[in-house]
Length: 128
Image 1 (cartoon, rainbow, N blue to C red):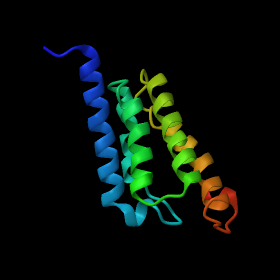
Image 2: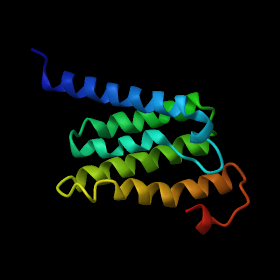
Image 3: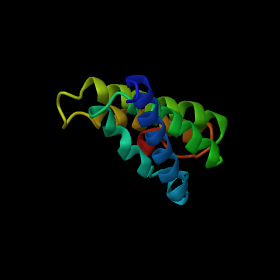
Image 4: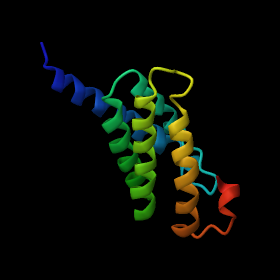
């Protein structure tokens, strides 16, 4: 019988791996001007297990590293995912609200990364 901490670490690692695979497989749309990060659908998983929080954060860091993202994107994109995961966990009592923190965090943070990191010349509010 495995300990609770071993199950937590294993679950986190599996979620991180899923995030990385989804990010890399869908790299053509994960890193474009209009980023569609399929892996972000996993941000609902904290509703089921708190192990999803570190898994999503680490998975986002690794996915960004493997996808060739710039440092600003690696740092702040991963923080957006972490905010979304923690927020989803805190709202787990209402399944309809769980995705909202990830949408808001990414909607606010990613446009600034696109503008100031990648030099995309579009109005911030349109990228949101």
